Image (cartoon, rainbow, N blue to C red; front, side, top):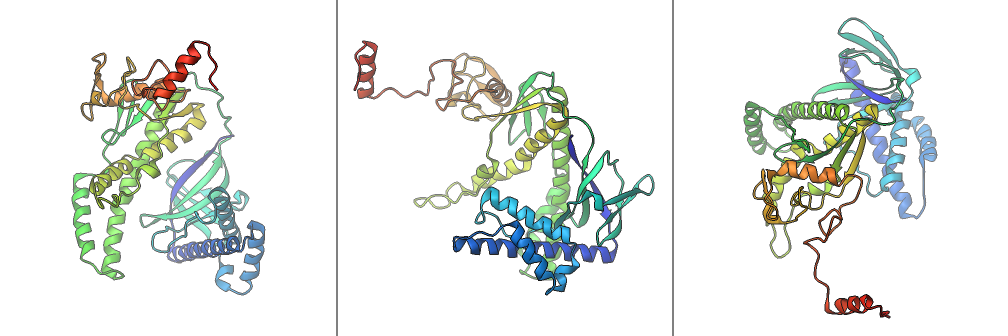
Length: 412
């Protein structure tokens, strides 16, 4: 069965909103305390797991009333999420939840304890433990049985996300053709068929207002009320930008997965690619501004978000997602496999110095990505179709050994 998400905007009362903030703060405190405890145990070369921390949490509720006010299943789910994160990344790599940067969110894992009713054409309500009935905007049908529900605050509003089981079987395969997708900083996605998918996420007026607010932010004092107001205004603009980016990624992914049976992507490590550049010891600060601009362009186009949207949409269509090595895909000719950095004349023009092929650079890269689907890209810069122009000449001793082996003389 396919598990899918349904997100709705909540309309909390004043008391419910205060209680939601309180529960979010309690979950953050439980997360940080449990993480500190795990790290302390690791320093002593010991271990504490989910079961032991749950037992200690139940004992702490008898001493601290603010812990007992939060739903028990929510706090237990927080400890379970921490246990999963520590098992995957290690206790020392899991991040703290900062009160200033972390947006409140928590999950009700028991779907049987959640009741949903339809009030009208545009409204519904959900009954949550210790919250009671909460109204939400009915923007789409649920379409299945509820498995869990998550509450989160974003852009000044609270949202609820239901994890539902729609009852549909997962398709085994998609009969459509294969396609390669190249992600860029000018065009968000380009397919090997020559289709370009892109849009602007911020209007000109919003960009001008955002810059003015940044100037106001620079003149405020840290910790002041005016600074909090400016930060809230900046957050509302970026919230709309994130919503548009998510909508674009979802619609693009749905269209591509409906049409193609195999989608080939570059295996890009966007987290590593968008790290801050601090220069070198010999030349501190060199290239930092240029790298900052590249990082902003990558995050603005939402490379990782498109990849996640494709993976999610492929579950319903049976489309196969393949990731290949991105080496040399942008400087290799898709017709003759000739690799030359000079062939990439500009961001948009690719002119092969070997065969003279002239094509859009993004389309050429998408075709190379499609050809690499199902096999790895060698580090010498070709797809195992012949001798690479990047191969270095053999060293003198290596040439001597190769000549002896060709004559049938064993080399010790």
